[in-house]
Image 1 (cartoon, helix red, strand yellow):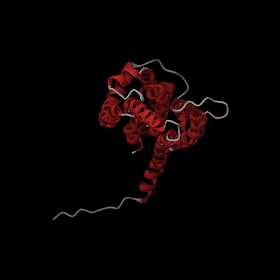
Image 2 (image 1 turned 30 degrees about the vertical axis):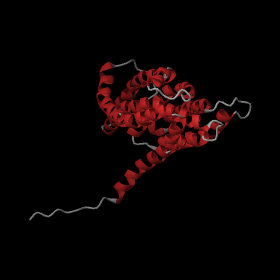
Image 3 (image 1 turned 60 degrees about the horizontal axis):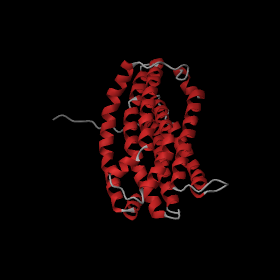
Length: 284
């Protein structure tokens, strides 16, 4: 009889894995906490049922495109990791610069979807009380859509090189900045008008662009990235390389989008029932 020797994971391997995973976990928790803060603060607005419902419906439309963007740009991470492991750092940087064109191409329709979302909400027969507030929120947050695509591009590049700390840094910083920005723009403090859910959208857009500036500065100055020379030039589109990245990213994007569409669809269907059910769905 053959015997199988079971070997416990080496402590060093566990430490290396946790060193990579822990910052990603913290960063993701920080990102989700922004949604929690938005919900709590929207619940303190004068017409809280409509505000929460608009945030839920607007967030569903925003997330529908976000899931596709995330999946598509996730191709950068394994591509960079493979090339970095093969000591082909210049090629890893080149592929990331090509992915920049993908990020831009995704950012434009993302912005367009949010700017012109009213026909979509009308087609889903969303309660008329919710629609103008949800549309206002989406128009405000749409200005962060291109920036978010660039944030994800730099995040996946950094993670592909084995440095996951920026994911934690920008996630935590964004969560902390979101609170005062929401307070000022939603409730009209320090001379600013009270914008309600629209202010929440603008706050998120500002946070996204600040996160992009932080990541760009971090990648440009940190010694970890110097061998890549990522920002040394801007390459023209190389459609063969772009196609190769899309062959990896699009199947991931479709899988994530199909799975997430169940939650998005549920939010939109509940939005037909009125502000109170839609608000309750967001809080739950």
